[in-house]
Length: 305
Image (tube, rainbow, N blue to C red; front, side):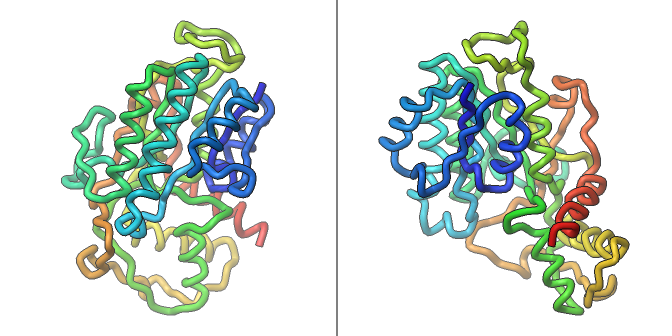
């Protein structure tokens, strides 16, 4: 069985390769092997490989750059999911698509529900929302996982940037009024795998050897708890010190600043809190805390540098 993973060299895509290898032959072509911005190339690849499952972890994630490159963002965030969903519907196979909290208005303090009104404030958020809608409307069996603040032991991300800056500087200013849950890529892949079974279930509507055993739809996927980017950074520094890392930054050296003092081309949501009860109930699990997940991810990274 072929499992097609887009964005396989990214943080989430790499963990999906690791997690789904037990289920079949994972196909994760590089950009050189498959240009995802080329519609015809993607159609040809699908026809040749005939996957039994598609995991779409590819995305245009340069949030600020998307403001000046809306067409490029649209191709990867909207058109590609629509193309993959169309293939999945026509060939009766399941599709997993990864999305973001940027689809919500980003205001208030109440955690977003999966059916909360959407109102993105950026090109990135708008194109991701349109991708979600295309998948939902395609008719294929699908899971859409909306997640937040993704990081991992590999790739470029906030955790690794803070460790580098924490070694180099004794003073940092970090945004403290954007609230969410830092989500490790490995947790995303693990939860995705938990949604599948090799046995047919009541939700089986396709011909794939792998079956989604929870209802199709949108789910929030993140750890429990909430913090700010400033709080996340302080926890990174504290856990790194406990692990024996020598840092220039001291607790008093990390200052919190409002978003207004750190202007960016794309507006950031202040409220990235997401209610997790739908996914926890569907999978029958309690998602772990963001602090415990940071500990595991940080340990993995520090042991391999």
